[in-house]
Length: 133
Length: 495
Image (cartoon, rainbow over all chains, first blue to last red; front, side, top):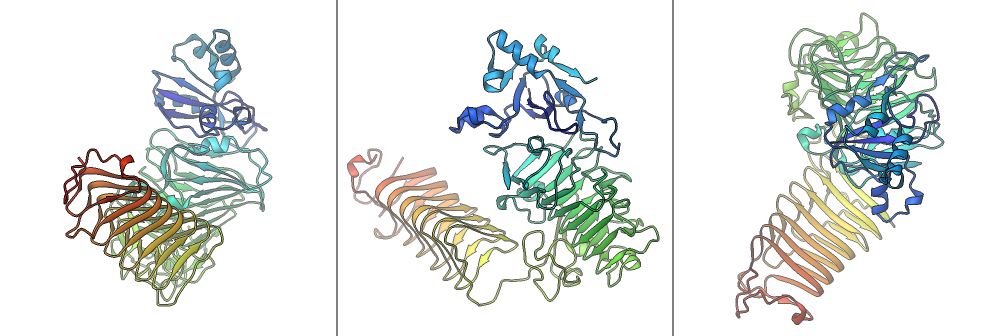
């Protein structure tokens, strides 16, 4: 099972991570840090409302890490020198839509806990991942 | 300064990528990643971040993850940034103008991509990138490079790094200026090592290869600056003054065997005392240069023995002391006192010798190493805190004492023992002996004592026994769990 760390806020310039970018793909059971996981932050007795965060965790049981790493593909940014650092993710997760759908069907852990577990074949997940135009 | 920990668990971040993703686009302070001891399966690009002379990015190894000159795969210690699959663009791809990377390992274990890629366009005359005390390597074969350091305008300083692999080591052509001080470079295959032209100033740097005719230093006929380098062929003397040639790796390093590389110098190595004095004080393991009559060439400074008889004192009102290096020791009459904080001795040989003391009013004392011991007349007293002995043989020898008013004692190891006249005493707290043979042994009734006014005793192991002459003392024996102890006059045994 792959666990995806998703950026949930927009970067401040075109070369930074944008909302919906997959930042990292980790193995099942990965121990995310307190700045990556609201659950970890809260488990250490910290106020959830003060979590700096900006990340969410999407767990995809049944998807291998190697398969999930397709979402880390980078593409060249038009207008910038093509000398090795394109550094924009080719794929995006429609995080807001995934969160909205999760809330609608009562599984709103994405909104409240910044994490969700879904089968890769789940229609919501399939609809959420897309290649940037 | 904003410092975030990178840990396998319990840290701020579990990957450098997430740490980088959370960085502000414009730094208004230094932005640091303190990396702890683990292998981090990750590849990192640093992009879109505006840094400056005083507001730079820094990635560094915590003292607990200090490299000892070997890969984490060999030594078992260090922060290792690695990828086995993917990362075709490179494992580490920084593109910010002001960056310092210190004491971490970067390795590409796959067959595509560089370990280090520094080829973006940097700000002309306004960038400063430093790699210090890092180990960088890969396993890819061919004529590509372990490190591509060709970024236009790049001002790069490489100090005390160990870089090795099968392909070419580095290419700095295209950079504005590159300084190489005390780096160790090795190729297992017949490939060119250092590829540069006049942008490189190279000193105290060794470049070698296992066999073949490819040049260790290749400058394309240009005239670079530098001196006191060394190579396994004759190219060091061709390009630089006061340099050594025909220095074979097998004659100077602990091991050049692929997968078991150990580029620490051996006794008599030609690189010892063959360097020129530079401004960087320590080697890759933190050893002060020079340890001999002059600086050594390469990342590792050879240390032949201990210090002299002068008394040295390290004193702090509060805080922590750390001794890390080839030989982390306190010689005769040295002592480490602190009002509060922690002491740590870490290294190949971790010992307190005769007359040495570790003293703290509060905090923790730790000895960790292959032989973690307190030799004769050593003692570790603390009013509050914990004592820990951890190692292959965690032993308190004759006349050693662990004493604390409050806190815990722990002996952990293969044989966790208290031998004759050893004592662990505390007013309150816990005693723990854990190991294959966790025992209190004695030939006379007065010899071995675990005593506490309040607290608990725990013996855990495959042989957990109290033998003849052992006794428990407690201010409230009724409260103790002695029901399992066979209470004969001379033998008590915990089952």
